[in-house]
Image: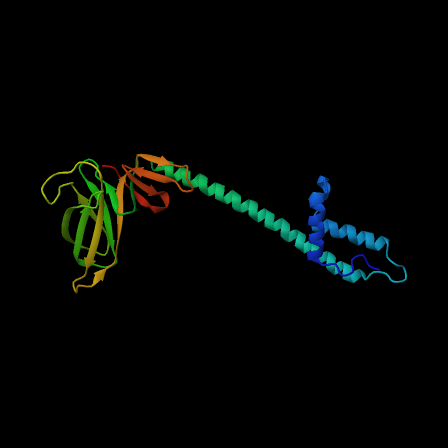
Length: 231
């Protein structure tokens, strides 16, 4: 009678797992499914009935199947190690990029910018030409401190505020938020995106993603769009 009769990969895996959990031998716990099958096959051949020998072709097919499964397991392990290595490398690259921004005037996605050296600067990016762009600036408490109306061309448009409020007073510090509503000549709404600018004064590399500090504004490195020359 064949020792391998009715044996399937799932049954063999379960047997191997059970053996590994109860044995104190490191060699047994580390033996692979493929090696276990080879041991069983050799045992079967040694104890086969000479009058009813095993079907060698069937054994060969089963052996090839287990060999493929063994290779697949090894490949999965290699891919897992490679993925972890790539994540580590990406982290090193991101941290290096973050450190290179220190002291640099960046342009990043975001509507909040610091008032530094008497000005706060943004870009509003329009999907189309706009004949009417309503601009509103609010302080950290949400109070409107400045409003104006300008025109804008398709693409990036620079807007710089000198800290002067609608009431005529001059603000010298703090963080402020810009909002934009744009329409074309026919009164149709024009989509927009706001970018902020500022000089990076510090960086935080402790989290999953590097964070840049721009005078009170936190910017994720993935939001950085580019840099400007500090005047």
